[in-house]
Image (cartoon, rainbow, N blue to C red; front, side):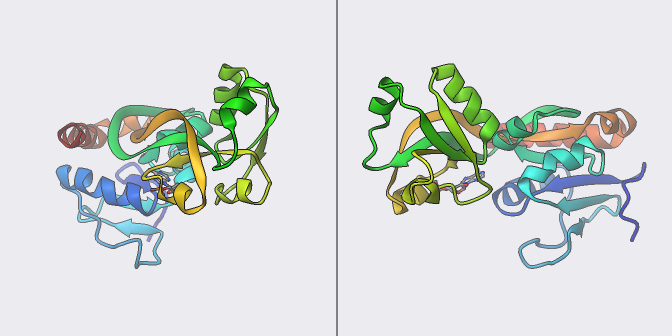
Length: 222
Ligand code: AMP
């Protein structure tokens, strides 16, 4: 199978898990069915019922990069991921209102965050969202040392690596299970459709109906 993105093909980049699951009904609204389940298949390029449409399974943080460089024509990515990426080369026509959660600051249950901020303490903050965290604390005028992590941020305050974390929170269950408390919401997060800007021009006839179907289906959901 030729895996290069060619003119007659449409390639969609998705990450496994919640974004994949929540995108399936939107694809269905556009008449597209993914023929394999990424949780059980080891394939990284999944066929759909339309031979001209294929789905790349990539890490959530890599979705904007594949789309930016045109290896995928379009994709679905969280606002958290897009803010870190910067969004260059990406057209973001639709907030899909899926995979909703929030980006928050959390600390150990015993840590008096408000007092530390009032006192002007320099906080050590562990996060994988360094760009968003830097902007948030700069806006508040709080001095922070950011510690970049790639996973399990919740561990950092437990072992004294940081005073606080910035992470995405959905039910709050993970924070509670680790005796952490959410002390500040930075922003609401949802996932967006992202489209390669060149593909939007060159493949508009194929892409436009899919964008519209996603738009209508996500409005009905939201
Ligand atoms: P929860 O325990 O439901 O608050 O989920 C929190 C954990 O799931 C965190 O470790 C997050 O990294 C991850 N998570 C939850 N929702 C999302 C989402 N919409 N996008 C990315 N990660 C999420």
